[in-house]
Structures are given as C-alpha cells and as structure tokens.
Image (cartoon, rainbow, N blue to C red):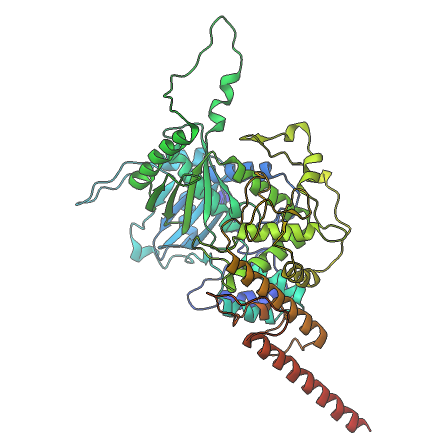
Length: 577
C-alpha cells in the first residue's frame, strides 16, 4: 500500500504562472470560501494548461486525453473527508496516478487510475443504494458516492481535502490584478493565465464526455463522445460551456475489410430517408437516456429542429452546461485549426483572450443568442489581423493546406478540410512585435476596416469583396459559402467599430503620457475593461475623438498625473539650485 500511496499526486491548480502573477492570483484565491491548493513545480517536460508545449498533433492530444478519461472516475464526497484515508481506500483497487478535488453542488473528486481494470474492480465492490420511498435506476456508471461509516471517529483522522477553484475572478478583482502588472504586455499575459482553463478543468471536461459516452455506448458500443470548441482549441476560458459530439463514424470502419471465402457479412439495420433524420432519432434516444438514466444530468432539452440538432443539458457534478451533437466533424476540424494557430505562436492566444474578454465587458458578446458577435467570430478576426502583419505572425489556411501530406487529406460533406497536422513543417514567424503594440493595432485596424465592401477570409489571409449585403462578413474557414457572423446587425457592428476606435485612442494616449504604473487609476488593458458610456441599445456613429465619460475621466487622470510629475520635477530642480 505504501508504494501505491507514494505515487499519488495532486495536480497543480495553475502551473503556468510565476513571479508577480502569483502574488495577485493568490490574493484572489485567498478570498473567503476559496481553498488554495499547494503550489507544485510542474514535472519536467510538462505543458501549460490549454497550451501544448511539445507541439503534439491535435489528434495525439485528443487520444491521450480520451485514454486518461477512460481510466478516471468521479466521486461525490462528504463535506469533511480525510484525504489520505480516502486515497488509501481507493488504492485497494489499483495504482492512482492523479487526483484532485473541486466543489460543484458538494465536494467531488476526480481519480485517475493507471489501468482501466482498477475501475472494474471498484465497480465490483460497489452496491446500488435502495431508499425507503424511492427506487433507483440500476445503472452502473463511473460516477460514485462515497460515505464515511463512522464519521465522528474519522473526521479528525488526517488532513481534510482541499478543493481547487474552477471559477474566474470578478471583473473588479481582475482589473485590480492587471493594475499590478509592469506593462500592457504583462497585463495581457496575466489576463490569459488567470482566465484560461486549468489542467484540472481540462481533465474534468474530458471525463464528463467519457461519462456521457458510457451511456451512449449502451446503444452504439464503438461510439466516442468528443469535446470540441473552446474546451479543446486552446482558447477556452474557465466557465465556458462544454460542446461535445457523438462520433459514430468509427463504427463502420472495419466493415470495409475484405474477408476470405465466397460470402460477405453485413449487419441488419433500420434505414431512414436522410442523414439528418437519423441524427435526430439518435439524439432523441440519447436525450431520453440522459434524462432518465444519466446520473447528474438535469434540465435536458432536445433541440432537434435546429440547423445542427442537439441535446442541451446541465451536468451538475462537473458544473458544465453541455451541448451534445452528432457527427459534427467540421466543428472538430475547426477546433483543430484554432489549436494549430494557438500552438504556432503564443501571441495568438494572448491577444484573443484580451479581445474576447474586452468584448464581453463592453456587452459586444453575450451568452444569449442574438445579434451580437460571437467568440468564434472574434477569434477569426484576431487570426486574420495577425495574418495581415508584416511579416505575418501566422500563415493562411491555404498555406497550411499546401503543407499537408497524404495522411492529412480530409473531405467532410463535400468540403475540403485538409490542413497539415505535423506542426514541425511550419516555419516560425520572423515577426517580433510585442503584445501591447498588437493590441493597439488590432483596435486601430478594425476601427477603420471597410466592413461595407470587404469580407474577412483566413483561408486566403486577405480581404475579399463581400458576396452579400451583410453588415459584416466573416467566411467560415471550412464551409466557404457560410458567413459565421451573419447574425450581427448594423447597430452591433457600429458599436464594435466605435469601441475599437475608442480603445485604440486610450492605449495611444497612455503610451504618449507615460502614465505612472503606480497610479490608482486603471491603465492599459485594465482601462479598456471599464464599462463604456456608449448607450448599449442604440449605437452612436463611430468617431475618433474622446466621445464619452470614460475617456474624459481617463484623460483627466493622465493630465493630473503628468502635472504631478512636472511639479515634482520643478521642486527638485529648485532644491538642487
């Protein structure tokens, strides 16, 4: 048993930050009701959460994460449980390689075993509870409850569990943290490190998909449930929804293999009139299973007549809002594309995090469907802007396609989704621009972009004539006939342009004034996160001057700070003379 316990490790909450970042970050974690995990140095060769450090391919990362999830279990624990005794108990079934605790409708633990057989051993020793007034659905999943037999005798025996924080700080706290940075570039990096999904959160997302896969596998034994979108594309923010899709393509792959003899065998199946109808029927059944048999799955909605049919539900134990689709392979390919861009140059993710968070604070994006820009659209705009730099920071999609090998060939629903998977074939950029310059230039570029006649196309890496009269046209990378921003109306576009110009102006004025970073006034990126005075329901015409109260106050603070420095300089000269 001692050998087993010696190998148990706790995942670090956030291994990527050091120095000044941890000073401010731990002030956030030290707030009432938040437990702080012990900081540990990452093992040699480990990677920053959400950002691959060893340039693995997207499929390699997906495979590793999926295997980790299949060796993992989720446990609902008592409020006060001694950590070492719990782990010692679970080690009876096999070696534990990783574990962590978190809070979501109670305390939960994620336990990763070194072998899948350990989970089967644990399941064999677990019973299904029977209540006096309720009858349980006898579904044996990898989501368990654990209870102390004699709580009063065991609570004081050992250190209680410490829970990792799975939420982002408030905007007020975040602005305060950013003001402690030494430069705008430092602010941009700090914001990304605070907001990005942690290693623990990534593991929890894959485990949640794996638990849903167990339910779907009752009908489709060879299926997989894969996360896509922000959970896997390296741009995920703590608290973002969990998008997943039921992949049934692997089920029929072995049927094409030739067999010896004079006969061929095939399965008896039911046929329907279209693939869409098949998708709707499959999701309808899976939705019923989640609603009736899925532990922790609540508020299940079957939205089957949408353009992309889906099942929406809340997974209480993990705290995730989930959307399940079927055979949505283009969405996964888009996730791979963003993963590649985010891995090629660290400035891509850092800039995207700042732009997206800025947009949310200015009510340019929303979690409610409507006429707003989406995070995906903003990320495409960041990528396009970085493609337009001289020299380019990241290449066009066509360039990635031309580098692809035969093994990368990919056609989905008639769309050519081919792109290189081996990142070592892509030459690094010679561009050395810093993040503070890029952020200001991003706002200036799109504050003066000809949206009325040009479209945004990252496949070519250059503007093209708009094919229709939409206020803003952002071409879908893999479905070129689709505009990913077709929902955005003229008012929302005008608001974006106005706020982009305003933000560029603020950054330029602060750069000219050399405002003291010890000032109590928000500066740099922090200043951009303050609410704008622009009416959010009715946009004003874009302008280039200081048009609202926020800018006037900032300008006054800049002038006041400059006046103080000038007075101090004169007094110093008088004293010296």
